[in-house]
Length: 203
Image 1: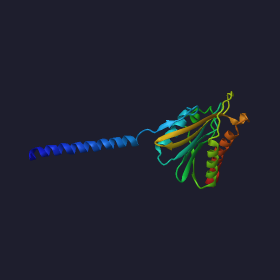
Image 2: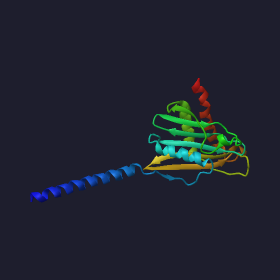
Image 3: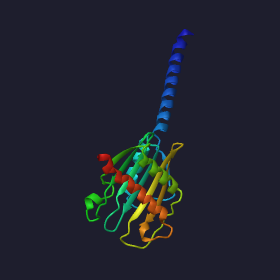
Image 4: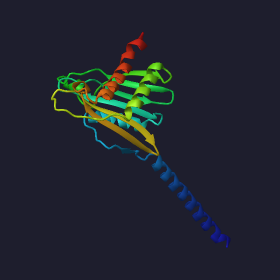
């Protein structure tokens, strides 16, 4: 009887150990599971820059929300903008306008950015956030036939239930058409106002 007890005990220990290991693997896989993206519209411009932006958002667990504005044009772009909102601070990245003839600097996926860090209690940030939230649900994309017009993709990224949701709105230069583009013009102004604070923060 005692002779059989040891092998049975040994097998039981191995079984429990294997079960725990399997549970750890399952838990680990869940933690490393790629967060799904839900977007009604695919990227139209600066696809590589947008992909890098979204991947950064997914990898950083502290980032709760993000906004991006990506541009392209016939002769130059209108700059690129990325914002990562965390609990107490917002990280704003922007690039200056780039001529399309400068292939290296204008190449999608290799654009360099300047950084501004905002305390989320700052008036500048609060004004931006209030504006972009108000406009976010009232943006209608539009497209016109104009070979050298600026083109924009606006992105709003959020996380919920292990998924990342992407709101994307494409639109051409809103200053080429007055009717129905006020919200789009206000959106561009909001991003540019954040960029203008760089000099103030460096004083």
